[in-house]
Image (cartoon, rainbow, N blue to C red; front, side, top):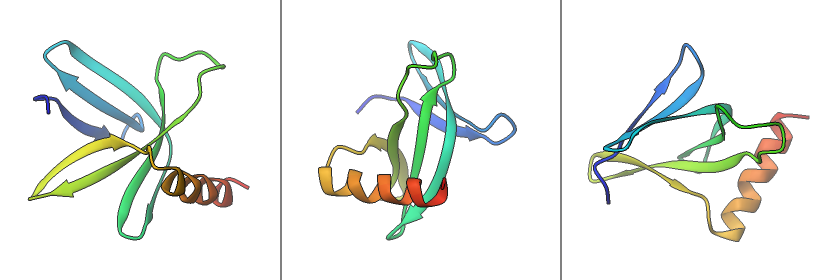
Length: 88
């Protein structure tokens, strides 16, 4: 794991990632909780209209929070369903 940090800029509704290479910002399209896990649907803030949104989750382990992409197909299906329900 790197020494990257992250936080949510609530004013601009962006996820901010910062590491030794700099800062990256992602617009939060949606956020919700499934089975006690917080998910964010994000897209790069400087992305063009053809860029796909990414589902990520905030994981709390041993008192530390970190983010990771949703890679499991079943979990991805649950996240997609919830996102679609909230955005109909």
